Image (tube, rainbow, N blue to C red; front, side, top):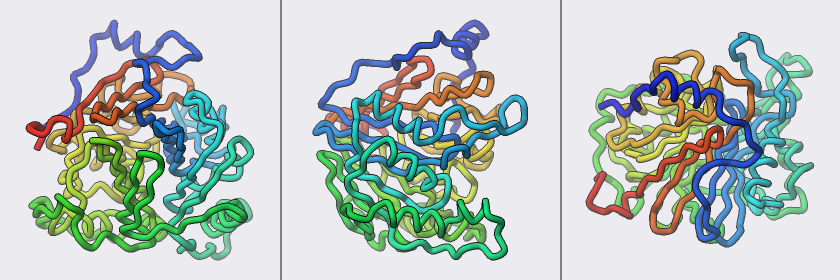
Length: 380
């Protein structure tokens, strides 16, 4: 079953490619009673900022260090990013009226997630630091100074230095954290996975049949990544960080231990190290893929996501340069290859009653979805 949105007319496509530039974000009005999320464009890294109705804030990951993260575009040559990941997170915070981060959650210590910590702390104070526990990757042997500077073990040392004097949580599987009215339940941490189905889950997953294990993992820190099911009102949001294909199988086979979700962060930037066929059992209505122009958004993953039974929208920070025919409608892509890098985020506004409004800040296009609990007789 294909969920790809039909192509636009040439005139409308032109309007989307070259929208009027404005400092204000487009989209619908937002209520202080809603959960607000900004999926920040950090060029194939990860950073998502949450603000609850109570004004509590959560940042999941911090993107790249300054000077890293830009990928080839039309020229085919990398360039120095116009703004750093920390700059982009700070801009998203300003747009939300956020002046501090109550909780900074680091899924794992790879450079595209943890590299922006020091630069971020120069811009926004952080209260509580959350991680999966100690780093799992050894310092690479015979590495040159640049590689050593951005090695996972080096970044972990900087992370530990950053949380000194602050509340610090090493989350465990099954642990629950309430941030205002946003509830986080950890389903993966430090290579441990949820062992028993959550209430209402546990259905057999026929998509597991014949799916092999995968030898590649992209680095053992991915195996240790935090993963969490977040609940706000009637909406369920799943973010598994960079958990691997094999970890997904442990959560989904032979039964789906998590159940169906409404909003799903496509695991590991849409790289084929994750997003196994059994993930279709999560059956999201909205998928968010934190890809870059040349990173993530792999062909097998885009095709797998297209099989999700009730998917109503795949939203991407970046146009996939490698697979142009697999991109969704440009309205669902925040940053297009035909434009200079403007770092447009994707914003979400979620009501307690289960209305999920997703907005492309490049052009103000938005679409509103209803969570399953908000429409109990549909999308089962």
